[in-house]
Amino acid sequence: MNTEAASSAPAVFFVSDVHLDAARPEITERFERFLCNTAKTCRALYLLGDIFESWIGDDDPSPLAKNIQQQLRQLADSGIRCYFMAGNRDFLLGEAWLRQAGLTRLPDPCLLPPEDAPEGLSARILLSHGDALCTDDTAYQKVRHMLRDPQWQKDFLQKPLAERKQLAEAARAQSRAYVSAANDSIMDVNQASVDTLMDAYQADILIHGHTHRPAIHRWHAPTSRHWRQRLVLGDWHHHSPYLRLEDHKFRLITC
Ligand SMILES: [Mn+2]
Image 1: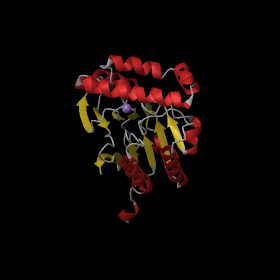
Image 2: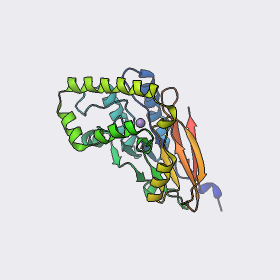
Image 3: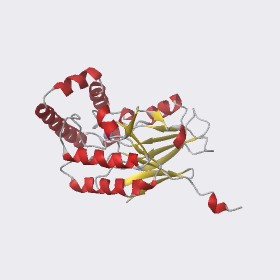
């Protein structure tokens, strides 16, 4: 029998925290290169939040957003399934924009759809952006609660574009000041919150971003029969990292 014929299916890619920003063209360049080259070889691309540094509404005529939308569309049109889960910076991305980009929205959290769960691998894989798990940061969780309120979002999107731009800029400055002053340990996920979430979904593997602390963590939880894994995606500030699922194996790649 020709074993060569049993070649593996194309890989599944996971990316988060690109933080695309008109002020950082080198990040845009790297991400565009990723979409045009590397991503062309996968069968599904999961964008797990904070792809954009900020999003103030689909009506913002930013050339950066338009170009990225077109490139994502090309990828989707070439037959690659592309998914988007909102992060804490791009949660206002609207349905029309996503549809135009060929992206399917995923709720946070959600299990990896069965078509991309490796055949024969019994592990249940959960996806999340990750910010909801940073429960030690109580101040942030309060803000998060407000920002995710549909009424708050509706009110915000009804403001004139210039006002939204100003508010977003002020929020970013505030966030930068907060992050630099806050205790580093509260900016990571809380282990008990991770286990509670994984219990609720009977998940064995959790993939998330947000913390910018790329790593593969492995531990044994008292509530689980199996070893658990937490795969943390890296940010794109200086590199172009992505997670690759291929032949039942995960690999964090940094280019
Ligand atoms: Mn984030």
